Structure formats: structure tokens, C-alpha cells
Length: 82
Image (tube, rainbow, N blue to C red; front, side, top):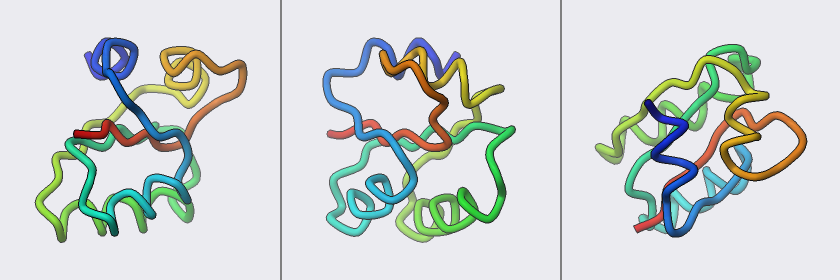
């Protein structure tokens, strides 16, 4: 699942704002978005990723996604960097 991809990735960026910045730099291989995150936060990330042809996968929860990233709080979006 996407949690494994995130936890095994060499380089990740955590958070919606940082993910958007990375997408604008064209340095993202894949984006993982939490299903339970506020759509107001994640819709911009998903739209930008789709425009650039970057694959978007969905994670079940922010809490589990944050844990896969090695942080104690939830994460709405994570970018896996090339």
C-alpha cells in the first residue's frame, strides 16, 4: 500500500504546502494524499499533480500517513521525491 512506499522512500516531503512547492519545481515522482484530510487542503495538490501527470495515491488516514513518515502528527499530503 502507499504507507510502504512512503516509509521506504529515500526522500519525501511532508505537508500540502511543501508538496505544492515541490510539484512546481517538477521534482515529485508520486504524491500520497490522506482520504480523511480536508478537501480544501488536498484539492490543490491533487489538481496540480494531475496537471503534471504525477501519479496520486490515496492513504486511508492522516494519522497513519504521518506515522509512515516518522512524525507524531497526521499528514494530509506527502510527496515522494525523485
